[in-house]
Length: 359
Image (tube, rainbow, N blue to C red):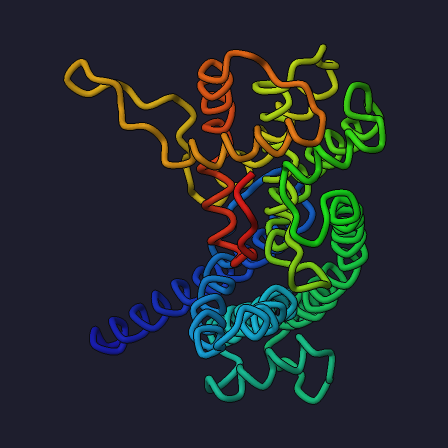
């Protein structure tokens, strides 16, 4: 064989080996992305899924900005998570199709156009194109058909799980609105608990909220798309519901003169852990320590001090006994609120949650 022909042959073989490896890499990466997104029971950040949702988020945000009212923007953003969920298998199938197109070309199944038709015929189980180069190409064709069915059934089988978790989450959000009112706030929630006679000892209610936070932590990190599924009513939000429950617990612990049941403290801890872990999944590190003095001076007073005093005044008018040390209550409230406020604000912006009244 002449040297030039030999070099050309070796170059072509090298290209086909590289192409085969690249195709296999794309296929394996996509299958692992699908498994990590829906099957793996832990919080995994999947690059391919992140690209899909990030690209769609930019598009939906641009469209939502055209809305003049929150209701109009909410209507647009309500489609974001469902569209992203449907787009995932389409992207998976597209990448798998590309990977097998490269593989079939590496196996010398003809031109790229022919390999593309063969890949999609196998992926969509059409049978309109058949491999011509023996066992290896046939094996690849059947494996692609299997993976195509696997990726589609994977999403379909996990849709009920996603919507069951969504339904359980929204049940608590809706019940909270019944207790805290349509203009929901922590003060309104505490006043309702006081009127119902369950402020001093409502262990069952705080246990329900504690379990809700624990489930939020598990479902919204293992299935992060759930964070962006919006409530059926535009004025509701799971983030704002979490903020109201945590604010109510912080007010009870810091300002109300009563013997606190351990369920309130456990619920508060569960809420702080859940909110911070969900926010950290989306690459946010919430500040959990009090601000340090600058040049020996105490930091400026928090601008929410007036909100705290107004809240205490409303609680007092409702007949709820308050601690005599207002300054100490304010400092304790600050220490408690800093454990979750940053994460709540971040998630509220991330999910475009409605604005609610401060405590």
